Structures are given as C-alpha cells and as structure tokens.
Image 1 (cartoon, helix red, strand yellow):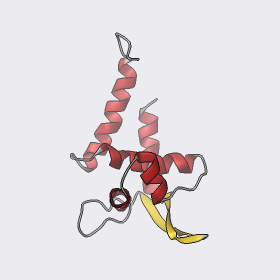
Image 2: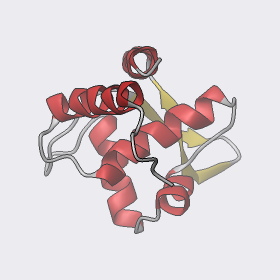
Image 3: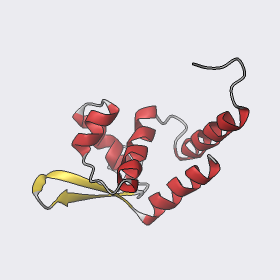
Length: 118
C-alpha cells in the first residue's frame, strides 16, 4: 500500500534506473527491462536461466522472449539491440535449450543500477 508520502529517495532511485534503460531505447517496454533483470537475478543467485524461464517469469510468448534475449545479446537483423549485455549459449544437458549469462558489460550495467538504488 502506498503511503501518503512515498519515500522520495527510493522513487528517485527507480527513476534514475529507468532513465538508464531509456538511454538505450526511449520506447523500451517493461518486459524488455525485466528480461535483463531476470537474467541478472538468476546469475546473482548462481542459478541457470533459459529463454523458457524468461517466458514463464516475465509472462511472455516464446517469440517475444526470444526477441528480448536477442535485444540484450547479439542483436537481430530485423530489430534494434545488439547491446552485448548477455551471452546466449546452449545448455550442455539439452542442446534445445539456450542458457543465458551476463557478459562483463551487462554485469557492469547492472552493478551501476544497483549502486544507484542505494
């Protein structure tokens, strides 16, 4: 429940983080932001995450989840992106699954967001 006077510092931190995402794409959807944050969160917990996990966790159709992954990864010829913040590999136990990992660039971006939130 939102109190009568929300914490201005916490709101400023959220605004600052969203502005950083806005620098990449002014029309970025929340699901695109959540895709990167879900991957960073899984990695922080030392857990594996796949495109199928993104579909489930963010509530996306398979094509949308894949596009969001490409956006933060190597990009795709038919869309914006190619930010190289994640690496898409194959799960060694199931080559049909793509495993997702943060790159050093992605880790630096997430660390910057987290530092700004404190």
